[in-house]
Image 1: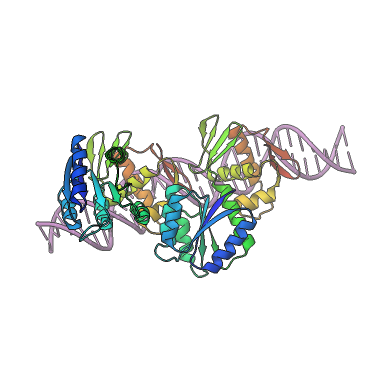
Image 2: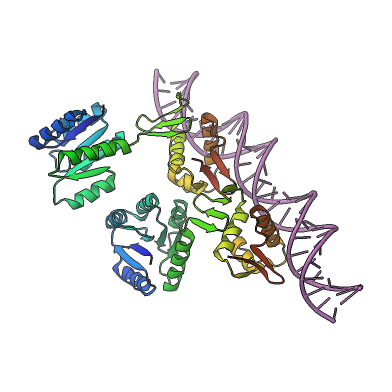
Length: 213
Length: 213
DNA sequence: AGATTATGATACATTTTTGATACAACACCT
DNA sequence: AGGTGTTGTATCAAAAATGTATCATAATCT
């Protein structure tokens, strides 16, 4: 079952949440300040974080950065007045928020929703990409991709069905605006070869490429 | 009418733009820094963004990323010297740019153009054009068009019912002012053949062509 | 009608773009 | 220093796109 970390400095709230989660079969850990939370995030592997924003030592936003690094979804626990916080958190990449005080049912619903929505695994025909492990398999056989190959694959997969110019690809994967280079073509070739994507990655002559979905 | 968000840190420019847009019947919002802009983009639904590049807190490129996520077209407002910015922006997927200071008429023209162009699916009898995919189907069967064929079709479809001279077509699709060439005729033929447009693309002898709608 | 001009159809030559391969530069690790 | 892996450039071959030339056909004009 999923493992959830709670970082929240008010013990009674922590206890309440843990009770709820245990009852629903989730595994839980908790930390009462940001630093302890950060340590746990690094040490262990969680499927979801519940983060208070106002925390001693390290605040929720900083923990959010940790979470992003490890690709763990986050739900913020915000106090009533902190609408701005909420917006900022969502902008920074939180997956949801819940306003304290909340009903246990609502919390569970949101957790369920985020976990379901949060696909660290992208499934394509024959290919599976696990963004948390940064691993790719073809017919369940692991395939080694270099960094650029992996990033390119991800970009293509995320933009499946859309025509992408070389310029766009370069800008987004390489963060370059070079015009006169065949780098993209070469990496497309390598991906096609490694993952049998000859048909899936369509060449659009004079335009660029399109990843068929 | 369309809703447009302006993100620009110079209030006088904002006021000017708002005045223009209101006069043309657009609904407007504005933000004076990148963060406020990001919040608005997430909260509300815009049809178009006008983005300055140099902005406090979050720059135009970052906002562009937000826009891409929500599929909102973007026009950059660039200062005179920033040609590189312009190129980078276009590569990253901006739809147009305009150099400050600009004439209100020009801004309106570009806005109009982008909004029209950004409709991603154009439906014609039997034919569907998806501009995001850069794909064309005839009776739901994909039809392969070359770049020029595709651009020509788009131009014709956008100017349905209007008589177009070869000169106009050449100017708009080929960006050429060649006089003595049969290129247009040839491409019209190819389109007619590929998409059963013998009747739909009317020949206007001594004039040019007209796409019937 | 016959001449003239404009357009349609086809074939082909040219140019441009992409695929494939080899290799050089570079970083990283031991 | 040597080995390994990644990344991008250079080169050539293959494929695709594009435009010209040519001739047939249709429309127009005197």
